[in-house]
Length: 366
Figure 1 (cartoon, one colour):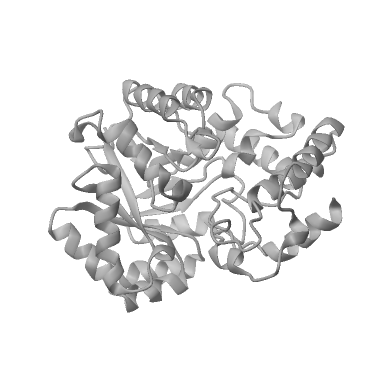
Figure 2 (cartoon, rainbow, N blue to C red):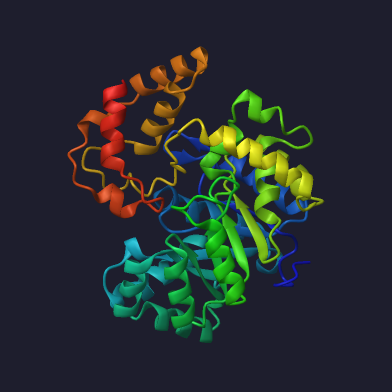
């Protein structure tokens, strides 16, 4: 039982952002199997959002979860995505459409999505905060929260302004914990200051912490690479939930094995992970988490996360992986040099990457 929310059985959640795919569509049979395995193992927290997989994540929730299990057997989180509305009058219709798409009558948690300083002002201007509070009063939302991508100073301001926010979803992993750009540790400390429980997103940093260099992986003998990353993220005292965006049954099985009997990090493990972090940072990878917020609406149709993944492989010192990266890049239809420099991707990126410059670097490298 969760120490902050008794209705939550354990501290590990199924993030439905990176579901198994068949071409452009969600692999429904495999997703059903993963949902079944997750619930059978005693977990019950699911997380989605309207932009995930271009709306297909919410539909998969209905087909694989809500139409097959009683409503009180699972916890479902959805989000109010600021890049999906512009006017106050668009918020309620979008919320009702989310309920319908997911096949439920209420959300257990509803988060103000990808909050930053500019979006905070937008939510004030459109009365988004007040509307969500009204929905909670109507019983259509059980708990109000926000997911957050900005500085600790901005987080402190928002939590001071909006006391109705009950939980905060932060990007926490052992690389971003000390990253001055992400400020994961500082943001966590702000949540402690305001006594807000924390949900963790990106514990394996978009999958990059499960593809470690051999000398880093050799330092992690007792759990999988993903297992160490998730346990690190779940260990801080205020963290009550860690999400993993699992894309196949193998990932589900590995994460269940790690979190079924969760054990917090030991002092010795923190020392080990410091060494792993140093090796990882020496790779100088593009820190893209493959959320794909940048790809919707890209006028050039560039699959930016795929470009960066190929680039990261290409830069590897290992000849076979480097060749794999080159082949992956050659298979991409719309390549980095096709960028027209409009900047919409940078406005959408929660990692604050200088994507236009990075695409120039990729084009030069290939």
